[in-house]
Length: 580
Ligand code: PEP
Ligand code: MG
Image (cartoon, rainbow, N blue to C red; front, side, top):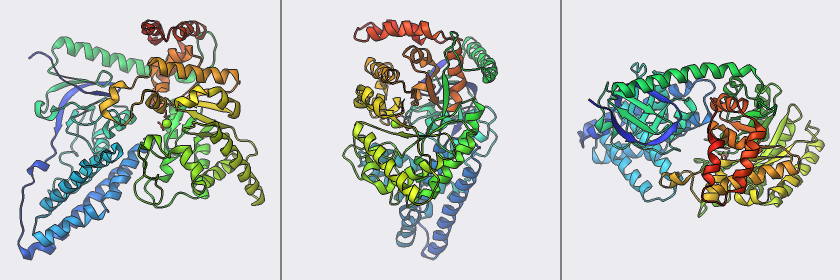
């Protein structure tokens, strides 16, 4: 049989895998309407409650098995699912159907699920659409327990198999990875879906959005998953097989070469030092950061402190978290970002909520919310000032659009220092205050921000979203997300220039900084600090060490001068070729 391209999905993790297919069937189409006898009502309700407990225990077990150093996203997804298992709509409502309409437990749950899904379908909010996936995952966990299908075959040894699924719950993704799965292919999902995020974090290849994959593939068929290209190939002929086998061998050899770079300084061929830092979400991530040779933390996201709880954390809790990260960083600098809540970073339940907004991405989020709600902001800033007395901590403000926001924070910090002094607590008299350039207005007025801040950090994930008017969580428009758009490059360049003119450091902490394809371009534009997910760091370092900064500067000057021209991509080419 000749090789067939089974599907082109969305590239989700830059890696390739070759192996036999393993198809995960959902099993919920097997649930048929079934009624019970009136005398069975209580035992059926009990069976349902036991299934909810089993599902909870299973999720808790999986959560405890999350490997040290796995990004916080993973634990947060599972925590959210554990929390949903306690929701009355899931835990109680099906029992009413069992009692009142004599539905069997599986059927009662299915009927409730369908009703809830319909409610979600009527909502347009993209954040709530993700919640819909969560609901499906949670219901499936209970169904698995009810059907006595604990594990659904998930517990078997997968040993290099490629998992094909309609979609995957975060818990299953971890379990399958644990069992030795080599790659994931799912029918649903976009680049920001759970599976895509988790696969990237776990560093294994994935292609999502391959429609009908479970229908066309059979178990044990040989597959090739090209996570970089977003392609799944079935029945590879010997030519294709040889090609990919060779690439996999090269990748393994390349990995070994990269490890050797660990001990070498991050310096270009012409002697320019380039600082490579890690983006970190939880203290546990620090191990991966250290293992990659990161010289500090360029972005510590603090949203996890606020997740899955009723009330916001108090000052002492903040302080404990910041002490832990400083301690883990062993003297290297740590940049802590103040709360960036809102838009794609929502919270479930509790008192900590962004007020409903017509358009959450343009609403009261991040620094805007913190300045509006000082009671939310003050404990965080007080704790940062206190922790900074114990280690090299820098404060970073997200989503700035007005210089006044910086001035307000500076005033608040002054006030808090006065309070800490009166309270007799230790604090740092000077803490570097930086801001994220994530909104075109901030990039266009970067010289103004540079005058009032100690450092700038370019958040390309949001900067690209706002510059190109593309919701970063919306699969429908994701094809327009383009870091190389001339408008984006112009804003990056303006920001770097502003930093140079005011002699303050400029880093980049959006995903673009961790993609080695862009390293030469960014070096050419003058970037000297890159902060990224640790797994990409050595590849970026390899590019840095193979580059000549002066040469790249020259090429980038030509590019910047020609950004208005239709053929500007011709000038881009030499800046995108990666050295190997
Ligand atoms: C960014 O926007 O580039 C960024 C780093 O912040 P986040 O992804 O947390 O919004
Ligand atoms: Mg951002």
